[in-house]
Image 1: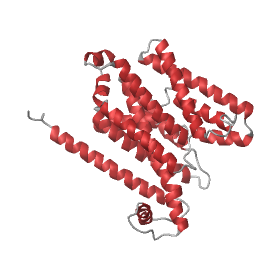
Image 2: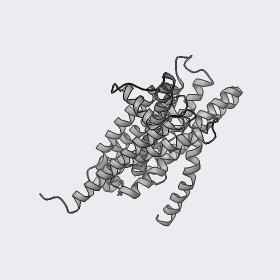
Image 3: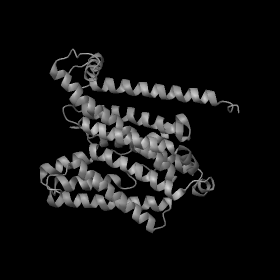
Image 4: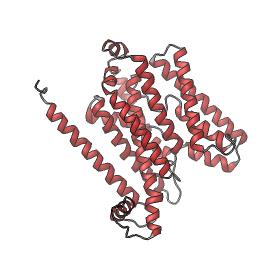
Length: 346
């Protein structure tokens, strides 16, 4: 059977777009690692990476090698993973909920993670055996479980899921504020607030590898449901008429994206607006087909957050700006633009 007209051109265009995006991401990571107080060049970065991968010997001193491999590289890679993950989650949620303003934090996952982290740091939950990341992960899961329970009780429609997420977000935000105000000292309060605004400082290879593994699994699951996500664009009834098991599919994909968001927030804190803004930018390049949209969104989110983190750690050097502050400064105008376009095209 002959291919539809234009299929070859579309495949070539998509391949070119993915290749350019991947090359831009690799170049962005390499250049971002060189930016900082220590004078490091791109060849230095390639030399260090090659040496640690067993492809040669590093020509740098142990200190400069450690700056690249142990400090800047895991942080930059985690920024890329967080950007890609949050953007993918936003894309999936906007499709499932048919809401252009949905993002990973609309389900209250970020607020739940914040509460879990505060419980570990301030209240000593776990008796010292539980890390901040683990506490944040448990809090995120509790918040999402509450959203599922509330939305199921209220009927399980998309608007009920969003409203349940808003309710959970407010509840866990209030719990976090209450704990910080009543039990934290001044030093703990500063540390917790900085983490809540999003921070990639102090992360290591373990954080990067764990989040990357969760992202890879999530992306594979979402790509496997690409045609299903395309069907959701026409509404639940249309998706059901095409043979989609609406309730089961929604639970699977929402749980998957919530787990990814929990993993990212537990390592990097609450970084907002990435999942809201990047899906709309990617759609302008690829259209609404999710088999093309998801990889492009992931690449765009990765490149975006790599440079946002670089800006956050250097613009007020030696003081560091929380990453979430920078994404909010960029994301709020974009959010207003999305609202305006939504009003004009209901």
